[in-house]
Length: 311
Image (cartoon, rainbow, N blue to C red):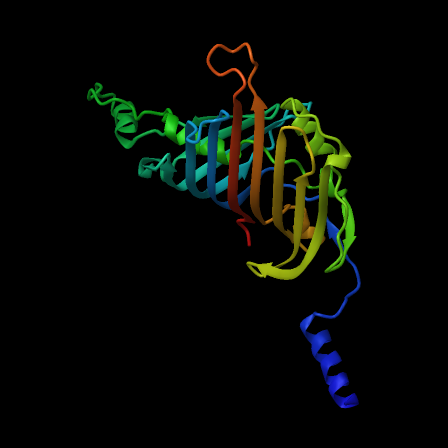
């Protein structure tokens, strides 16, 4: 019996199932300026808007869906305003496609093209960088007359811009806002999160929440590797608790480089799952919809990889 107990203990230690010492995880990492990353993202977003009126079984419903895949090289420019509220990216696309409200959208003509993404004061703008064609260069060198061909359209279609906006807005707060610069964590034990950024974001939308109305925690889920880089897996979970007219659940799974030299590059994989329900009673004096409840249910499932190109 003693031999069995000893063998079981040895097995637990070798497989990492036994309680281990706390691991110091660095949450201060961010994307490096003047650096190129291999970038890919897949997102599935739905939003249902429903008008509810007592006595009516079938309510008017509007449903919006977005299923998007994007891949390319993401370059972070060193350019930044003194206020540190402006960030500039160049995204050289390999692929951009998906479905908008069940209508297939594919943009093979954008493959190899570069999109300038400027983020300032929480808002993102997109511009397709012009591409000089071979015939235009030949005309310039040979002094020939124009062939009558038009330059390529260097504007993004509304559908392409909508896809990009769904991926790059809203922006993600730095992890350090929720977890501090560093935190000791161990498997099976919950660590409190800072709810202040969530409360502030809700207040900007007119939703009043307090720390007591948000339940949240973080947990360490062990270690693995991406492209031979050791990473820590951390889960962040937050949900509403009796917020008037509002409910939400937010789950974020992160893979963060375990070594400081890699942690400077920030999370290498981000998997997000969110659900929120917003309910509002329309004013009684509204001649058409007075007393009706407008309920909006939004869901978002997103998986993103950001890997330094030199690995």
